[in-house]
Picture 1 (cartoon, helix red, strand yellow):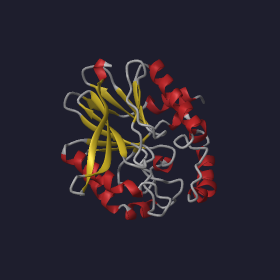
Picture 2: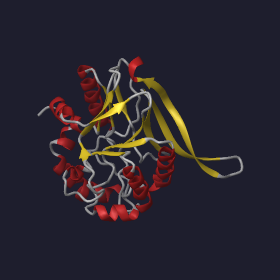
Picture 3: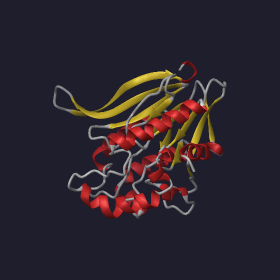
Picture 4: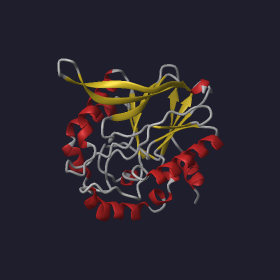
Length: 276
């Protein structure tokens, strides 16, 4: 199966949510929530993530996670992840209670694609979602993006084995996983090229994660990427307000009086769906 076929399959029966002038969605991905050990890459940005989620909860946004939310390659026990990051999951449960929470699955949390996966009750993890413009101006296609990466889609069990038993111990010494599209620049560029090509040929505005490299698309290249929540100096995401997309970054800053605070910065946009 080609990457084009894998992406087409993901969207074939994708649920559709409305996109209108009143829409408020926050798109994030690649949180890689772990078990609190030195391999938990989410741990350093947990407070930033929590502050961002509180902001979006108060503002009435619907939270859509585009895969790799939980690190289930390095870790086997989802209950342990929930326990370590209990405050984060409690806030996510508040979104869930108001019908404002949607999860997609990526390669690192592929286990969540199975109904028996432990976590939120009665919530399904989808391979893709479509934000359908009620006025017909243009839809947003959302997926993780691992479908463009053969090793992390067709051979994901092999990749999981390599990460869990080979590269996880080496990570403690600063060695990067060469099989990862997020850590290997050559694989990253190749994967992004495929995602861009699919978006152009399909005529859709595509938003994905997987490569951890934030990007806001344009008319010439209708491909966007949310980035990740494991950057060294902050987390990124894409806000959807009405029919417009804005790439944002949440980071820690210091005021003149030496007080630390969480800052929201707009990196790019807004780009409007009907004015690309």
